Length: 321
Image (cartoon, rainbow, N blue to C red; front, side, top):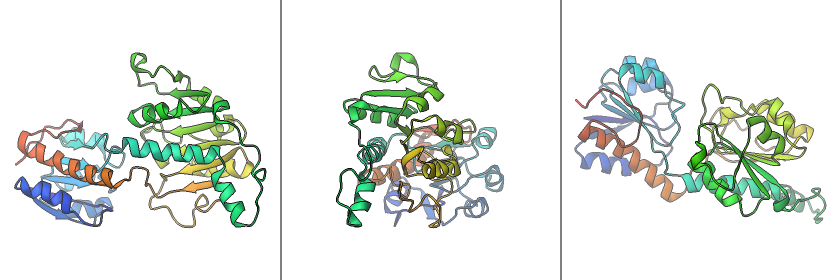
């Protein structure tokens, strides 16, 4: 069997190669990001391992031998899921490799915003030594934090935030009430923005969540609010966020995920004095990288051995050749 790694940011593919070759599979590393490049790289492949590349229905059409696509990570919004379902192609992911890491990164953004760390740092570098220079800093126990999405990461953040913040509210229509965290108040979507001094995003990107944070909802937030996004860039209307920062409606944004990645250096939010910009790094720790690489490859090995990957997002019908 031939396995193609279409794209990855990792410096090598030693982990994947060891896992796959020990199972008797052949692995090839390509540098394909566009659908056209992926389609060319996928010729003759039985399975693909993908990080950021777009895998469209045209790719499936051009590479009829592919039976499984395994993603480095959780989200599969760069895949044509419906096309895979129609064609019986398996899609697999690694659902929980970086839960603690992403929640920690989000909490770091929350705390940096609440404690004015970016502003204090910039003013100190300019010679301003004044604790009042950034405006009032409120005690955490007087603030409400809103969590948009209570999957694994959202629940981990909620558990960490509850001892610090006065109120934790959340919106997640998919989470049943019987497993809803006891110390988190369930609210509607607009109510979450109206009540939250800080909002942290933990939703998947779908048609109905794209630009869920738009100008109207930013306008619902208390003046001087904080926004943290470690989920997907497309959840936020970036032009609306820029306008909200310029007007003072939003005091600080911690942004790890972007509409277009890599984000251009001249993006108006990069280098903005009220933005903490990070390069889609919330998932990263040495341990998380090793785990996601190994488990993405193990999806392929398990499918090759049993006909089903470890973590199926789309249940396919294609079997290994």
